[in-house]
Image 1: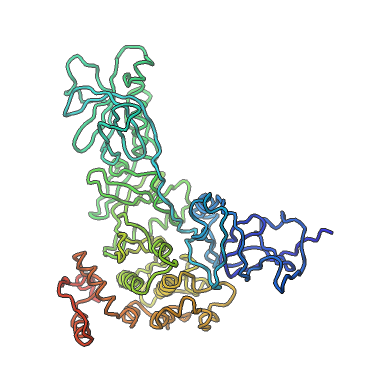
Image 2: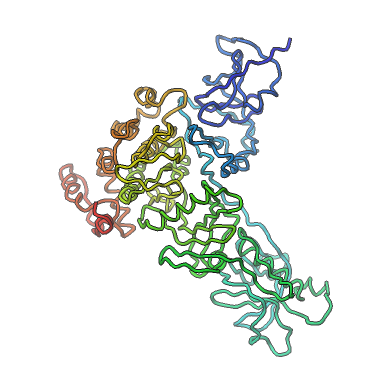
Length: 625
């Protein structure tokens, strides 16, 4: 007899696999369906496909026959799940984003599902022994990785001479997403010259013939760099197209195809300008664009982003609420940058306005702990926001650490920097509204790196005693008042800091969705299970408790948090002073504390370094507090 399953929507407190498709049930709550009788777990979409083979309440040695959500049974996982990048990328679109109003959020596949699929296919995973959800990257902030090798765009023989040497030379050209390389032949690895695309200032039709040797055929187009002009191709005017000549790099047609390919490589994520007008003349048609320089507030029209920056289409640094962030390089200086691109045609008006909000806020922020906005370009189809390029983010640091959590010493160092940057924001009545480890960028790969806050798309201008009600942020890090659509103020950021401290030290999120947040906070055994919290100081949990206060008026402010005993630690102060001295700028610690720490060192017979810089604190120069 075929017995159908009796499925009901179920919330799981630990990572659970669909027993039909063998993929992760994603989400914080109501992740899937569970049979009321045999406890079979599956996606909602898979429920109708599950065979009618319910075993009923069968037990084996006192345990359910199939792994239930709360069992520690090891489950086989088919990790050839190709959805992690393609499906999750759709989270950028409004119609498919999780709704913060419902307090719902979806997770990428957890760290143990990453890596080489072939090598891992036979492995198994065990759900976490903690009932809390393991820390992982959320869909709203997908982290992409750079491709292993650049894609070949075009290759073939081509001729050229230069502004320094008018002898025409023939090489085998290879164009990829980052450079144009002139090889000695079509098989060997030896090359004559490599021209990084980021150093090409312009590609122009042939116009300068002063260097042309007498009696030679004219060139077809010009590649202009900061140090040299390359006169490319050889135009046999009046002659019929010759395939043999074209294969050797001679002729107008083959040169024009190279010109088009190079132009497209120079602007890989922007609309391609036409290089062929109805009159047949090679003319570069650029769309109307506006450039806004943040540093000197200059606004220029008809400036193409690709004329100033090279965007590397195969170097995707990440994607936020409304666009993709690419690696790039300033053509004249060679400075590395990150370029956020929003396609106005693809993304809704709401997301475009969030980007404008981010730009408007960052234009007025100048602080070492906040990502630097360089300039903005706008065309009818796209907006380009150019920012400083940093090394990675705090979530990467946590997940790549031993046991996927950070030591207290490093956490104190990072959290102090976050709080100092927040103090600057709150002084200017700006509330970030979306603080999470993904939005805390690291300036280097050092063990004690500089951190900078980024992604101000949700930021709000909120006065000291003001409240806002619009839904913002990422639910896993959001305070209860926002999830319940109540009014919120700047203390919203402080709740997020509490979650950041918790996930940094434990590697898990502090709450699951089975219980009310109030009940969970009051249950110390639930909030701080012995593994790993018995190894973590009581000062750390005390600060977390004072930040994760449901009542906003009881929640610690930035200054109270910075004054907490957990952060008022001599080793932390030494680490910060060492960092400031290395950087040559004092903006985290304050000179008014120096005498106190020197006295502390004497009292406890500790070394007190004398080489620290004594420059004034930025807060004194900027704002006062």
